[in-house]
Length: 429
Image (cartoon, rainbow, N blue to C red):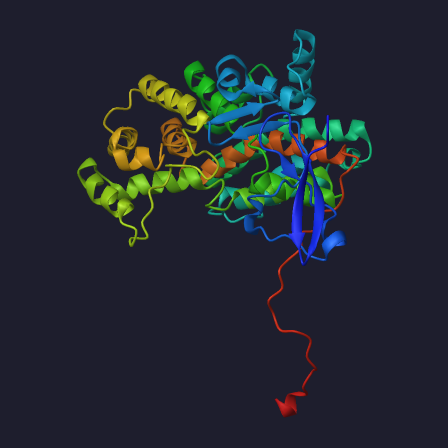
C-alpha cells in the first residue's frame, strides 16, 4: 500500500507530511518533524484538532454518537457487563474469561481497605471542606503509604498500583462523604459487589443493618460503567501529561482528580442540577427556554448538547433508562425538580430549535437527577465521577508508560509578549 502524505506549502517550500490512519476514525497528519523541517509550530488552542497520542482503549465518533471501549459499544457493556469486567477490559484489552474475572474480582475486593492511619488524614480537613478537595489530598497521599507500587518501570508494581487505585477509590470517596456529613466511617464488605459495596459504605450506619437495594446497586454500576473512560478528555490528558514526567501513579491520579473538579468537566452534572433548582417550577420553563434561545443572554441550559457528541450522547440513552428505573423504584413522583427535568427533557426532544442544534439531553443531565434520587448531595457528584473514571485514567497511564514512543509532554506556544529589551534601573523608570 502506498504511504499517504499531505503537502504543506510554507514560505516557498513544499513539505511532505506523513498521514497515519487509525483502525477507525479520522486520519491524522503527523507533524512531529514540522518544527525541525520548517521552523514553525502549529497553533491549536485546546488541542481540539491534535492527536496527542496513539491509543487502543477508547474510540468516539461524535458525529455518529458512537462510544467504543476496546471495540465494544458502550450500550452493550452497560447492559450486559458489570463495572469490574469493564475495568478488566480497559486495563488488559480483552473481556476476561470466567477464571480471569474471578481472579480480578478477588484482587480488587481484597484491596478495598485503606491503611488505618489514613483515617486520621480526614480530621485535618475542615468539616465543611468540599469532598473533591479531600479526594485530591488523600489520593495524592497514597504514594506515602504504598512505596512498594510506585516504581513505574516494574510491570508488577504498575499492576499492583492499578488494582489498588481501582479498589481503594470507592472507600476513600465514601470516607470523604461520611466525614462531610459527620457520620462514622464504614468499612468495606468483601461479600458485596463493587457498586453495592460503595452504596453500603456511603449509606450504612453502625446502629442498624443496611441492605443494598439491587435496583439502586445496578444503577450505580451503570453510572460507573458509563463514566469509566472517555478518550483524551481534559482530566485524562492531565494524567498522561503528569505521567509523562515519570511521576508515580498515585500522584498522576490526584492530578486527574484536580482537573476533573472543574465545572466545565466533571462538575457538569452538578451544574445541571443547580440549573434545575434555579428554574424551580415547570411554569418558569418557557422563560428559561426563551433565555437559552436569546444569543444576547448569557444563560445556558446545562446538561444539553456535548462538546464531542454532535448527535445524541450514546451514554445518555442508557442513563435515561436508568434514571426512570431509579425514580420508579424509589416512588419519587412529587419532586418539583424532577418535574422540571422531565418537562425539559420532553421539550429538548421535540422542540425544533433543540433538534436543529442537536441539543439533546446528555449524560450529565440524567446522572445528576439519578444521583440526587440515590441520596447524594451535589458536592459528591464529581467525586463519584472520579471513582468511575479512575480505571480509565489508570488504563491510559499504563498504556502511555508501556509505549516505546512515549516522551515527556511539552506543548509549545505562540509568543505575543515583548521582544528582548534591556533592564532599566528603578530610579530611571
